[in-house]
Length: 198
Image (cartoon, rainbow, N blue to C red; front, side, top):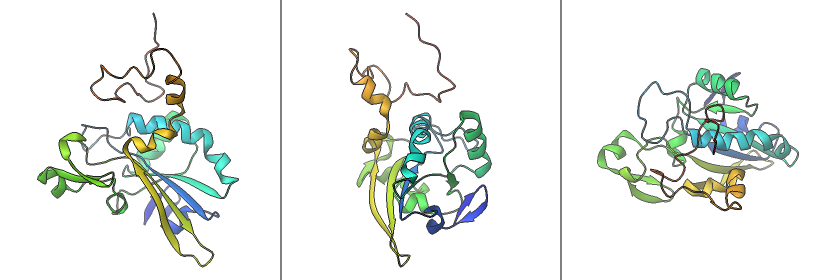
């Protein structure tokens, strides 16, 4: 069961009236931030959400529901949506095992052991020091109501959702991420960038 602004929802409910469902697993905590009160959501996931906000309506016309799921409480989700002007549907998996079941949440035991399963491989925790992770999962519901998990991707596999990278790959400096602590360290919530100047 997921928590939404209208109440409890099942996985089947997330399809709305369509047969195909794409779920973006939005990180509730930023990489390296383990504080329990953190409520802003990951800046990189927020950039993905900016792209989702621009396209989710178009997908509805193609029998696809695009849904965002994260472990943030509903009140934090709604506050963030309001602040950043997002209109897409977003539900909380805060009270269930969905994120772990679909490979985007490391358990306390995995973190304590120093190895986690992510992106179809066992990784050392220090390579990606966050228990909450991002990814994309796709589901299909047939006419009998059977639901199938048809696809998932993680890590940089979600990069195609970032149209900004298309433009950065065209300009002379490219992505210009080599000197950063990690490749996407430059990303911010769209209302928190400093204006660049020469």
